[in-house]
Length: 292
Image (cartoon, rainbow, N blue to C red; front, top):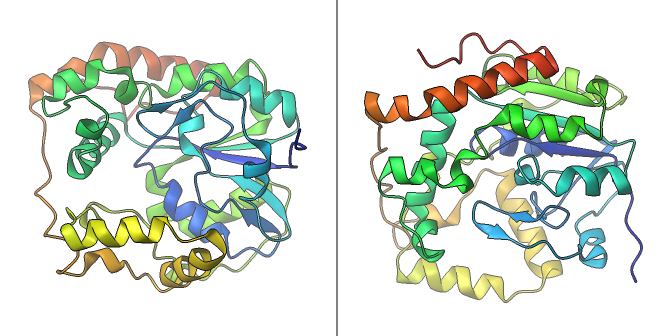
């Protein structure tokens, strides 16, 4: 049986909370080794929005996700809402530091919903999220928004001082301070980050429906071994290049879907109670996020 690799921190959160930007920025720090791919999805049973697998992690494959020196950070954001992940992390890395990115719940949910519909991930997994009410009723969407419940599970295994919460807008308006705070939380030296070179933000404009040629390229690239594909992908990411945005490989991204006031109210009772739980457990100010 392969040994469990050393990991020092976990970047958690939910889709559309800014973790892609933060992970990309942290790759610049010489004392940090960010997981590659960004989201190994090996420790948690949640393998993305829809995938679920409660079997034991493949530790050999997990070790291969870390290349380089420094504090290893696993950036599998879906681990936050996974009920299995907190105990697994605590059992294997009891001194791990946790960084959790949070965003205003309604906008996060709508962005996540749009992303799934744009990529047709719902249909690929045998469901239909075209109706927002039905999508919200599916825990695979709503559980990622219920931050208080998720953080409470982590608090069963880690103390409050191990957890650093980041409000997503801070990364947009005060990125240097956020990165400084993250380094402090990880007990690492400060670093002068080149914010202009951080391109990877996973925006809606990047989610263009692929053409036949785009799907063919994606399939072909999936067959390449990591030691060939990895350097190419990293070089393109560093330059902010998304080859799939080429017209021959993808079509124009669809318009963003909005929700009605009545659909927004579907979230109110559950989300507001959950925000109160988050405030009580972590002292995190959620006053601007309550649904009126």
